[in-house]
Length: 335
Image (cartoon, rainbow, N blue to C red; front, top):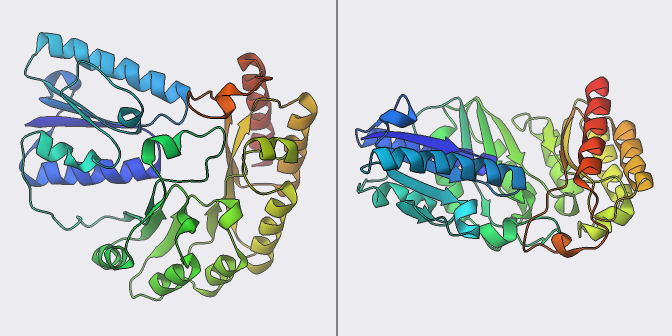
């Protein structure tokens, strides 16, 4: 069977797609050179932002056109978008918890295989999220927070620690893992020539003990992705982020005091409902003060089913985009 996997979204999706790809290759299937040559097209989807959702739906529509010409073509849609909505005209539809079953659904029953040697390895330690940030659809499509047993994490870690140069611990809210600093410390003491990373972290769960562990063990990379989302307390409260700008700045201060060469990146949403020009300028001021290494900046995206989608004072999209463009340019100059 010739297959193609089209992956969208977060690093957890990248990890899922890699595992599916490995199982299909191990079973003797091959990657198709084009959609037209494929016997199966697998869409591993994301729906965090509306633009991503619409892009994926347009790609699925193109695959459906190919299926009209080749009725034997199998179309599988897995991941967040499948959990959010019904998609007609496809052969397989699986949510995030069942995504790995796509291999079996395509007609193959495979034995579990150890991961192939790779320079970068990803290990899921949590699934789902229950922070319920008012703009975010993740809890509705990935479910409540689930903790992966430490025995499973250690076993998967031991399979890759001697071959991978970079190992990433993953979760929608990775530092919600119970006793996360202790987990980091235990893994960082293992043999192997690797650097240990983790993402993404929530500021409300990021504590001084994690920073101390990062500073203590050389195998933990001196980089952190810490989504700020906004630099204005009024908007942070509307976002239900459960921290203030002062709280966030304190984490940054502690990181830089204990780890002077720390590389800090962040996420920022521009044009959240109720955000005024003055609120946005507070974010600009905060960004200029903190001086991030890099920032992923997006206009606010309405997601049906979230609290923010029903809020009053929705900011016109043109204004959202203009603010995001301005902040991107400010970050570009600083970087």
